[in-house]
Image (tube, rainbow, N blue to C red; front, side):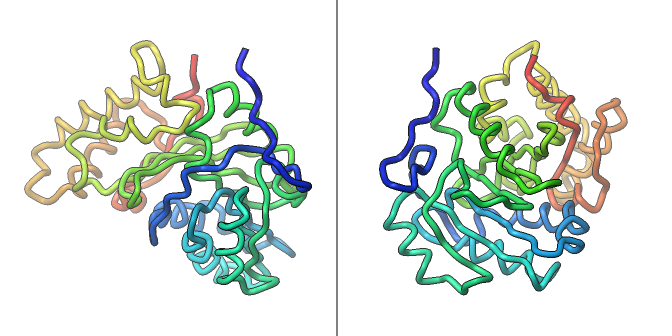
Length: 269
């Protein structure tokens, strides 16, 4: 039986394991853009919205960017960056602007806070599937009423990403986001699947079927290649929807290199 994630040392009893800490400016721009679009009403109508960025890494830059991208939606919005490593917290404090932007030590227990939005990127890849599921449950249990967790992974410069959006009832949607010019085929995105799915990219599993279908649609859309990779991606997603996949977004989002489907479409069997 897999062990649950251990508690990091210290009085705060922060739950989890330190990440590698790698980060880059604009690495999480794609998920931030999606958050701002998808959860605009949630943030705009909240009286005192708290957003937590969990595991921001050795530099606080992506937390600072998250605050800058979401604050125009609500001037009362506060952003809290959480890290297990004390040196990373100290680095974050140099960029803090309390009470609107703060940095603290914390893990999956969220330092006792209850956020409306929780972004947890590139933090679960080192865990087993069972441990990642336990981490999901822990984080979901600490959200504010109506809160949302967005958990996923991306490459080092944010050109290939995927994430799951969850609420108190569990996973709701799954999203791929990419720079189409960076792909040979959509199957390249498999290496950036979140922990809940990355080991499920095998025949018989739903996420494998999605990636296989995307590759077929991408090949069929080759006639759009002269118009550029973005146009080819849009056509591939149009074909995917035409084949019966329940695509939730529209052409405007597709042009950004995105596609979102209900979690049920990729849920592990």
